[in-house]
Every structure is written in C-alpha cells, then in structure tokens.
Image (cartoon, rainbow, N blue to C red; front, side, top):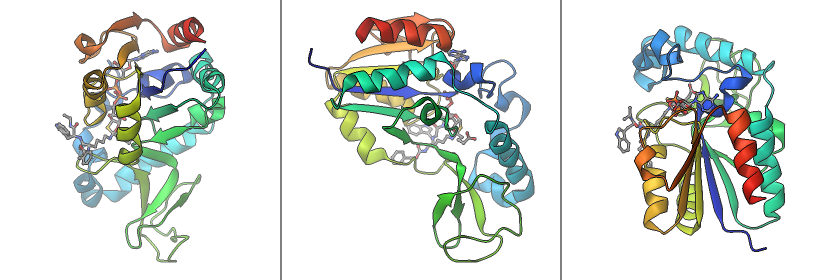
Length: 232
Ligand code: BJW
C-alpha cells in the first residue's frame, strides 16, 4: 500500500507521562516560573546563572526519563513508512523520540543535550551541566556557552526542511501541543492549505482544535498507539 507523505508535530504533552513537565497545563513550567525570565535571550542576559540552573536541572532530569508506548508507536510508524516521506517535527528539547528509535526527527526548538557558543556559534553535544567556567569545544573560550534551545524571539531550527515537508505532506498529525506557540501553531493551517488531512491527538482540545479534520483525546501513551495502529 502506498504511504502518504506524513508530517508529525509533537509537543510537551507527549513527554508528560515520561515525567517531563509541560509548559501551560495546570502545574506547567510557566505557572511556576515566568517565561520572560527563562525562555528569552533578554532573561538570559539579566540572570544567566538562574537560566543555566534551570536547564542544567532539566538536562539532569532527562537522564532518568524513558520513552513510553506513544514514543514507541511513532518509531514503529516511521519503520512501517519504509522510506516513504516521513518527518517527525518536535518542539521538545528532550531526546525521548530518539531513545524510542525514531530517526527522522527535526528538533525545531533545539536540544537539551547540546550547547551553543555565543562567541563562535559552534553547537555540540553536551550532557553535563553548563558552568560559568565551561569552555567552548569549538573555539576554546570560557563562559560563552548557553543551552542550545530556541527562546522566544529566536528563529526555530530546520525551518526550510519543515516547510518543504509540510508543503508535500498529505497527512499532518499534531500530538501533545497546545497550539499556543508560533510558528509551530501555524503548521496545521499550512498543511490544510496544501490539501493535507489533519489529525489532532491530545489530552484535550488545543487552541487549534477547529483546524483538524479528526481528533482523538486522551493520554498520549494510549491514544498514539491506538491511532498509529489504524494506519499501519
Ligand atoms: C497531553 C498530555 C498527555 C498534557 N498526553 N497530551 C505569530 C507568528 C509567528 C510568531 C509569533 C506570532 N506571535 C508571536 C510570535 C512569537 C513567538 C510566539 O509564538 N509567541 C506566543 C506566546 C504567541 N514565537 C517565537 O518567538 C518563536 N520564534 C519565531 O517566531 O521566530 C520568527 C521566525 C519563525 C519562523 C521562521 C523565521 C522567523 C520561537 C518560539 C520558541 C519557544 N521556545 C520554548 C522553550 C524551548 C526550550 C525549553 O524547552 O525550555 O519552546 S517555549 C515552550 O513552548 C517550548 C515548547 O516547545 C513550546 C510549545 O509548548 P507545547 O509543547 O505546546 O507545550 P504546552 O505546555 O503549551 O502544551 C502541552 C499540551 O499537551 C497541552 O495541550 C496538554 O493538554 C497536552 N497534554 N499531557 C497528551 N499525557
């Protein structure tokens, strides 16, 4: 059976049952800390130690997090697509999709396990804490590293690849994202405009719920395997 080109967009909700917090739910990260302080370049300049501490703690937490059946189902789906166009776009900075076996993953908001040098622009794998004394592995300067994540006002990664995949896709699936943050929140509309069928899998209707042709609501560990089973 021919496989339709597919784009899957994931957000924090797919990692919630792995113990990693979401942002905007009750008890979400932004209900405890102001996003202006933790997720903007200006917040980092104001208080780099606070921001590094927040990301160091999340990087450490990731070491004990494991993927669940929802992540595994997306890896199985990719394998079943057997080379047909498939792109998993994630807003998440964790590596649970890769741990589950996904290969074609575009981390549009960066990765916790990567550091970015503000002096030379070098980016490299970094699994330890970033300290004020840490040296850049590319240029050797001290104190220039920041988390390699995308904050508000910064340009997300892999946008050219993502735009091409959305223009070509026939099936667009959004999983565990509130639809509150652009440009990701606009992808479903773009996919609709090029004729794709659109599916939302989420705990509850997102801000974009009206833009989906189909929806399934419940915890990702249950609804993602159930939905994937219908198209494999
Ligand atoms: C479950 C579940 C379970 C729970 N099972 N589901 C209009 C157009 C374009 C841009 C803008 C615009 N208006 C404003 C902007 C600018 C801004 C923006 O969007 N602001 C909004 C506040 C309006 N955007 C930007 O600045 C972006 N850059 C940009 O636009 O550059 C310009 C440009 C773009 C393109 C090309 C060229 C130029 C950058 C945005 C960066 C966002 N960064 C963060 C932090 C990353 C690092 C980190 O992790 O700390 O990314 S903020 C945070 O929000 C994080 C997330 O990836 C992102 C989205 O959150 P997500 O994943 O949706 O989580 P939640 O918590 O919101 O939702 C969870 C959902 O899961 C809920 O619906 C639950 O119900 C559900 N759920 N448990 C299933 N068990």
